[in-house]
Image (cartoon, rainbow, N blue to C red):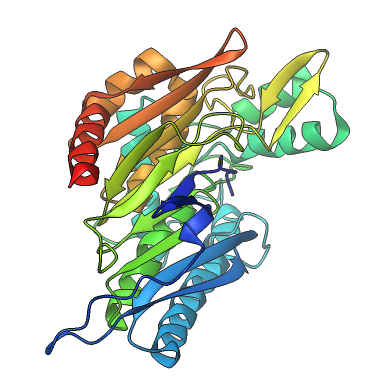
Length: 354
């Protein structure tokens, strides 16, 4: 799965990941039960996933969180690129056979959205990037660049137009033998969306799910207009510069702070440009806000590949999308904001003044 830069979440006057701190119960009324804050954590999809929620008691809170974690685990068995028994890997085994493979509703939904994002970004996001991603995983381990021959061969297997979806029959066909799908830039967002959906089914609407930088927000805490989100520039231990008050939306952050390799004095990101097959060297950090966690996840990867100018142009073309790009520059950082991000900041400032 794609690594994410840290996003600091601020709870009252304290800065702490996932608002770790004291409970913030709702005011008691005659008709509204007292809600208490609960936090749970479990490793799923190879990352620590935290759930913060408000419920009337520990038993119902734990049951809701467990159901959400179990759903994320179930999705990992479908979409994991590492698990040889996953549905995704079994689909890849059919590449080049001409077979149209029936897939689950979950995999269909993610692949459909992935293709839409690939088209919107003109290939900057591409779920077929797996062959070159595998080469760069090896490059990070061995600290040597992929050989030109292997890289050229892998690039021949990348191209979202070779991923054919039949909407009528809900089947998928991979046109070239050796193709390999990688959903690391979108699957966690989908898992976050599903976790929030399951929590609501369990009667919990005031919740936040953080899956390694992919954050999904439900209704706000009972005593606030929104979840207070602070976006932290590089390095991750800096205090947030910008504060947002958000609810019923998602925040996804992509960057290479933790997963990169330096070869020959040049830094290469774990994020690969599908169009060139080369790990990114621009080092920007991208935070995207969108009501749909799946879309936010995919867009953060796409904008990382596109860069500042083209990335902001893409974001501004998508209704309800907003983005902040942090660019290292001469020992400091420069912040680039999309049009809607500026509006979100303005609205959040008004909330904080109340």
